[in-house]
Length: 320
Image 1 (cartoon, rainbow, N blue to C red):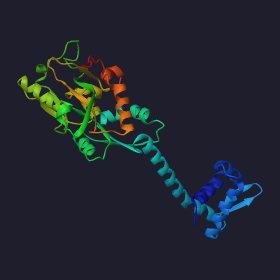
Image 2 (image 1 turned 90 degrees about the vertical axis):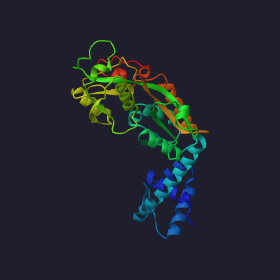
Image 3 (image 1 turned 180 degrees about the horizontal axis):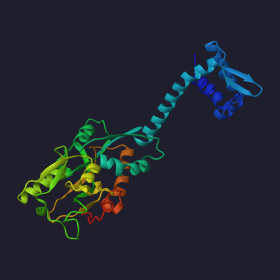
Image 4 (image 1 turned 60 degrees about the vertical axis):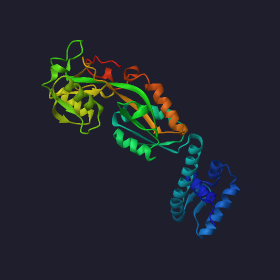
């Protein structure tokens, strides 16, 4: 019967080029190395290693055996690593979901710091909030970063634990050459009744909801000229002078020839929220939440998040 130690010995000989080197790597005596190699060769009925005064090399059959054995050894090491991670950190693979802006600007550093040295792998799913909530409820995700505009205690249901990290205010995005782009005073949206507007493709985006509600209160309906969900695309079209838009502070970008301005009207904000199932959370999930809260709990400007309010030309926006 094959012993896994025999495969370990064969791989150590291949790596070190000698039985003595294999013994040092595995912390065995050289007679033990010879014993396991002889037992494996006897079981397979073939010579696996050619020995010489200068060392040892695998035969063609030995290399074939090692190719198969390495798959087995790698799987065993993965099992050991996963069990250790699950025992210490509650999960071996952290499955997290996020909307695209959060995935690129909030998660990378926080994930690295909260999982560093833990042996925990990460699987990231990018999707919109409603889809992410469904996946959390189905236990396909351990946690998710979403955006919303309601009260977290009443909007989502008792089966979810929702915590607001920070409030992300909306800003009016104008081309730098626009008549309302200069100055320091907030812009009155009533002056933009004849402008073309960019909105999202879906029906959930909170910025669309606040835009239509505000414009209706001012007696006009915004004229839609483009639907897009990619904020770089939105910045590009606004910068080209083709439209205006409402954009959350977190999504503001440099280099597009645009200005982010506050408005006379209260256009509100969205909440950036951390979601898990209700009940106890694995330690790694808890560590991630604490790291996100520690770094971003003060909002976009307080952390100088790339692309935040200070990342837009001549931006006069500030967190609320």
